[in-house]
Image 1 (cartoon, rainbow, N blue to C red):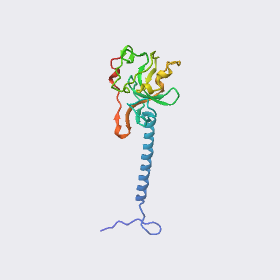
Image 2 (cartoon, rainbow, N blue to C red; image 1 turned 135 degrees about the horizontal axis):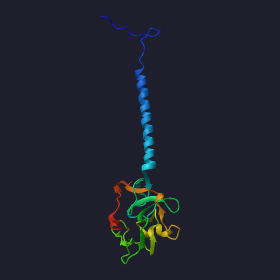
Image 3 (cartoon, rainbow, N blue to C red; image 1 turned 30 degrees about the vertical axis):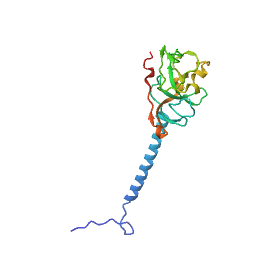
Image 4 (cartoon, rainbow, N blue to C red; image 1 turned 90 degrees about the horizontal axis):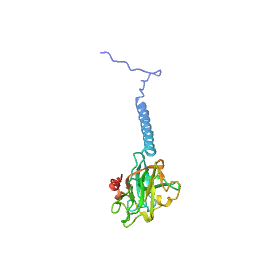
Amino acid sequence: MAVAEEETNASGKPEESGKPEKKKKSALRETITFTIGGIVVALLVHFFVMRSFWIPSESMENTLLVNDRVVVLQFGSIDRGDIVVFKGWDGEDTIKRVIGKGGDTVKCCDAQRRITVNGTPIEEEGKYLYPGDYAGRTFEVKVPAGRLWLMGDHRSNSMDSRSYIDDEFKGTISEDDVIGFAFARYWPLDRLTFISRPDTFSNVR
């Protein structure tokens, strides 16, 4: 029976296939490719989809406490009741709740110390408003188109639209300055929860 001859090199020794070395190089390339791809995806998610925001003050108590951390989604429409992160009046990232949007008339307050939006009283007590708190000053603002009127949930401890009501934009913030809306609180772990839009404003027209 004929036996296939083994290929030899010039020295007369069998040729080595080199396949193990090629496999190692191929595995290394795949690892590097997946690592770089993962980093790119993470950066894209960070810059275009979601970000993390740290709560620096007491202005959103008791909904959000100092040192809480929230996930902020950077897409989707913004509406009344949403908690949003935006470039604030001092140029720094700020977090507040949307009370009125372009075209709304926001007024404080009725006989029960409730804010009204387009004449509709907003029932905030027991939902997210800091216990016993209210707006604290009389005002009436027609929100310009493309802008938002924002307030903290801890009204007596919040620098918000009320504090800048005398500026050229009546204390409102441009929708273009909104970075995104708070989607979930992820830290501390014992306060992990999704943040949903309350039904408080459902009757506003």
